[in-house]
Length: 309
Length: 320
Image (cartoon, rainbow over all chains, first blue to last red; front, side, top):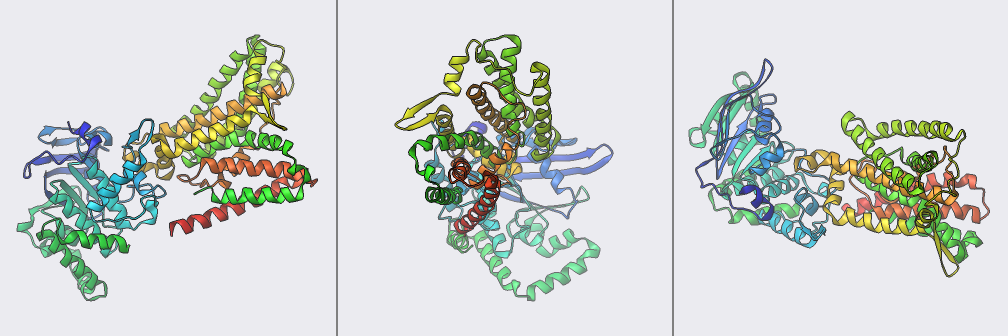
C-alpha cells in the first residue's frame, strides 16, 4: 500500500496517466446556513496540472482544507482513486498520497535544510538519526529539481522564498505524494522566484503527479495549467481545458465584468515597465520547459537560478 | 554553533577571576565551583530544551523546592521509608510538568502566563503545606528515618579526585548535558523539539505531535527539579519552604547566555551548561576576589546582554 511505501522511497505514481486520482462530485461545505462552498466538481488526473483560481473569499481555502483533511465536506462525494473518501485528519490525507504545501507554514525557518526535509519522517540508524543518509537524500532530491544548495546545514530561513517553496514541494513528492496541492505558492514571490516554482510544477506534472495549483494569478496558471477551474463566492463559475481557453479569456473570467477594465489597464502598464523584460524572459523559458522534455534545458537554468539566489 | 558566545564568555570570566582572585587559582576550589554550577546547570539543560521547544517555565525554581518538600513531608508525616517520599516526589514533579503542558495546550495561553500562574500557586502551596505539616517554615529533619543513608548516597554523596571533592550532582549534571545534547541533535525527538519551537504549525502539518513534545519537555523540567530537590533535601537534611525563588530566572539566563532564543527553535544544551558554568564562576569568583557579592546580579545582567549580542553577531555572520 501507499501508506507504507511512503516511508521508504520515492514511489512512482501508481495510477496510469489519464486516470482520475482525485474526484470531487458536487462537493459542498456549509456551516449551519452559510454555504462556504457549493457544487464543486473537480477531476485531477496524474500528469496534469489543475489550476484553481479565485479571488480572496472565493472558497479556495475551504476547498483545500477539505482535500487536505482539515475540514470535512457536508455535501457531495470525494473519491480518491475511485474510492469514496472523507478525510478526518491531515495525516489521513497524507497517508493516501495527498500532500498540501502551504504558502506560509511549510518549513521551520531556523532549522537546517535536511532537518526540514525529513521533519516528521526522520531516518534512523539504531535510536539516533541517520544524518549522513538524510543529507545525501535531501541533496539529491533537491538537485533533481534543479535547486543546488551547497550547505544543507544552512537554516532554510536564509534561503530565498522560491527555494523554500521548492524544498517543501520536493519533500512532499519524495514522501510519496500522488496529488500535490499548492496553496498560492507564487503569491509572495517575485518574478524570478515564481519562475523557479512554476518550473517545478511542470516537473511534477511530467513526473506523473496530479497537481492542484491554487492561485489568483491567471498568468502563472496559464503557463503551467492543463485544466482551469474558477471559484467565485463558493461556486464554480468556469471549468475549462487549456485548449478551450486563451489567457485573455481566463483573465477576463477571473476578473469579472466591471473589474476587467481596471485590470487590463494594470496589465498594459506592466508590459511596458522594467519588470516586463524579466517577466517575458521567464515566460519564454516556461514555454520552452512546457514543450521540451522535462530533463532538457530546464535543469541547467533552474540550477543557475538556485545559485544566484 | 549557538554556544560560541557562551564559550567566549566563560573563558573571559575564567581569566578575569584567575587573575583577580587568588582562591580561584586553588585547585581544591574547583569542586566547589563545579558544584555551584551543577545546582543551576542541571536545571538549565532542561529549561534550555524547553525554550528551544518554544516555551518558558517560570515555575522551575519553585518546583525544585516543591519536590524536596514533598519527599520530606510525605516520608515524615506518614512515617514511611524515605524512598517512598523520594518516589512520590518524582511522580509529583513529573505531574506538575505534565500539568503545565496540559494547561498550555488547553488554554492556548502563552507559557509565560501559564507558568507564572503555577509559579505562584506552588509558592503558596510550599509555604502553606509546610506550615500545616510542621508548623514552621522548613521541613522536619528526616535523617533518622529508614532509607536516608542509601538515598543520601545517591543524591548527595561526594568523592575525592586528588585534592578536589566532586559531588554526585556534578556528575549527574555532566551526564545529563551529554545525553540531552545528543537527544536534541541526534534523535527524532530532538528534531521535533526544534520544529515545535521553530514553527509549530509547520511541524503539525507534517505530523509532528507538538503538544506531546512540549508536554514531555515540561516533564523534563519536572524531572530536573526532582533531582535538584532531592539533592537539597539530602545535602541539608531539611528544605526551606521559601527556597528556590528567583532561580527560574538564573536557569533562563544560563540558557540564553548559552545561545537559546527567547522565541524558540534555536539553542544549545551544551551552551546552557556553559551558561551555568559562567554563573558558578562569577558567583564564587566575586567572593574569592573579596568583592561585595551584592554586585553578582549586576554582573550577571551585564553578562546576559553581552552574551546575547555576541550570539546574535555570530549567528548573523554564520547565516550570511
